[in-house]
Amino acid sequence: DAGVTQSPTHLIKTRGQQVTLRCSPKSGHDTVSWYQQALGQGPQFIFQYYEEEERQRGNFPDRFSGHQFPNYSSELNVNALLLGDSALYLCASSPSPKVARWEAFFGQGTRLTVV
Amino acid sequence: SQQGEEDPQALSIQEGENATMNCSYKTSINNLQWYRQNSGRGLVHLILIRSNEREKHSGRLRVTLDTSKKSSSLLITASRAADTASYFCATGPFYNQGGKLIFGQGTELSVKP
Figure 1 (tube, rainbow over the protein chains, first blue to last red):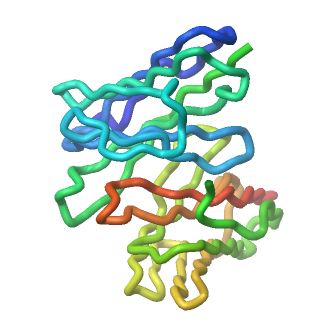
Figure 2 (figure 1 turned 135 degrees about the vertical axis):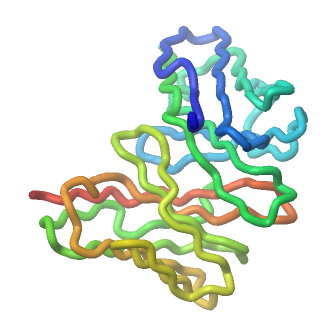
């Protein structure tokens, strides 16, 4: 049973470019959340997708957008990259918000470096 | 913004000693969770404690929660070199606000053999 998988593991982009990160949730999970973790900091919530819709959003600009596909996998897109977007991007999958038992499983992350 | 603050920011101990990390948070919670992160990679879920629980154990881990003080502690007993990692507390999910987790800034634990 594969856990949460993220791709790519590392990425280097130039300022102003656009990037797409991908996440496949754990089997049986249909909710995907994205987090940004700057060096030396705790993860910060970007947004959450459930039933192919953005359900909740953190304090991030519109340059950050996402998508969830019918198979529950998800993409995080960041446009007009800034140096400050350099971070570890983590994907977390969890069961439907409707179930009583809730736990989040995290992928290994994508390390994005903007130069 | 961060919900919680961990204390200490860094902790260095010898193998076999106990490690205690503390977490304080600001708003009312339903759950508090502890995660481990090795070398800036993915987060591993350690334990969840609900707001109506005061203490929970899992193997060598003991978590306490004091909702009156808005604080939690994680105790790792008989530490091993493999416990070297960053440890984060996270509040959530908030059932009426989706599955968002709010993390503290973490405690970096170093266990020397």
